[in-house]
Image 1 (cartoon, rainbow, N blue to C red):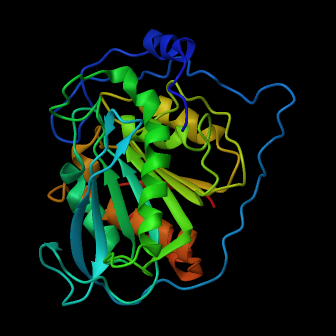
Image 2: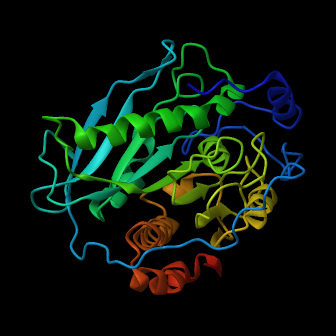
Length: 331
């Protein structure tokens, strides 16, 4: 089991953070204004990460799916409860509300793990996460014990334990593919996995490619996140990254997100929303920008996990729709 973050790293984060939350809908105040984020570079003698990654050719499902939903109760290290909400492609007519107990659709589907922001919960992001499930992805979203809304012992610095939480959750979710009698048996593509997250969950996601590199990850999406406390020593096999950030973000500054993006040595793109804030315009289905974010992130996952070249070609048009965003495309 991975060890918890060291006091020195916690202190580094404490120097640069003032807090009280970063959920998508509560106007919270966890701020990262682009201050130092240690470790900031590869250690001496450490091999530089590969500049390119290999995305195998393939095609994503052409038709949308109905969506099923279930809960998985997990505990790490005996004292870290990690309930996981799983949205998955299901049989039945596409569209409508996700339903519990729906049989999984035939096929093997890539897995996307999602990390929520401070004082949030996975259900807050259902509008976006179900869009991914409709497109043919199994989405697993843990509720973190120290940073979620209603946490018994809320602690912003517990964010630095969350990359290890995600790796633990990923191991347990992927094991469902071989578990006799499980509804997802034979439905998970364990060799096609992405990490995603919003705000502090974006920090968690960056950490999974830096200080807690999980070699099973093939791609990442960072929504309004930064490298605060987890650094930019990107390691391991190259994995394409998509950053999404509002230029008027009042919690995690656009410059902090951009700095983390610029440090990525692999194929990457950044979707910037000139009028976007920290979360409402990114994740609320009622916001005009939501469709741009949902379509762009979905096409990125179709390309990076299914190897769908047509999805990659559609990315610039999806990002430009309505003149609400710009795309720096280095994929």
